[in-house]
Image 1 (cartoon, rainbow, N blue to C red):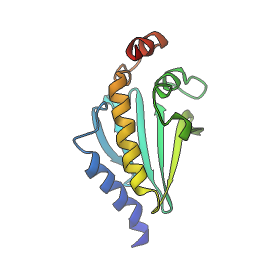
Image 2: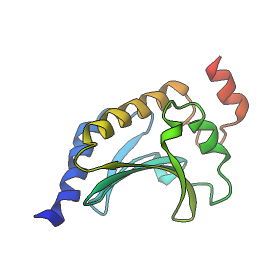
Image 3: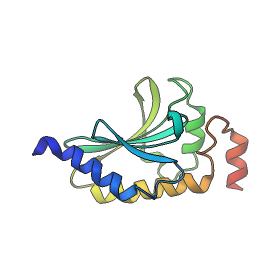
Image 4: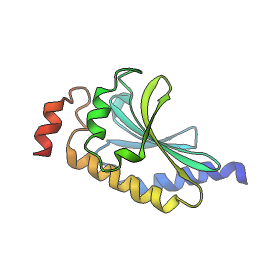
Length: 143
C-alpha cells in the first residue's frame, strides 16, 4: 500500500489540474509518479511534479536547452513571486529550478503554490514562446 502512495498522489495532482493547466498545452503523467505540464513534442519549458514517499519535488526546466544554457528559464523565473523558494539543480543534464514540499505537512502549500505559479506563468505571457523568449519580451510584458 505505501509503495502505491506516490502514484496515488500523482493521480490526485493530475485530477486537480486537469483542465486548468494553462499556459501549458498538456498535462500528463510519467512513470506513474511524475505529473508533467508540457507543450507538444516535449518542446520548451516544462513543470514536473515528482511524488516521492516523503516529499514532492516541483521541477521547472527547459527541455530544449542543456546544462549551462538557462537564459530562458532564468528570464521566466525572474517574473515569478516564488523564485526565492526554488534552488538550481541538475536534472537529466538540464539546469532546473527545484522546490521540495514535505509529505504530508506541505500538501496544501504545494497545491496552492502550483496554482499561483501556473497563473503567474500564464499572466507573464512568456512560457508559450517556445524558443524565442528574450529579455525584451519579458520587459515588454511587465510594463
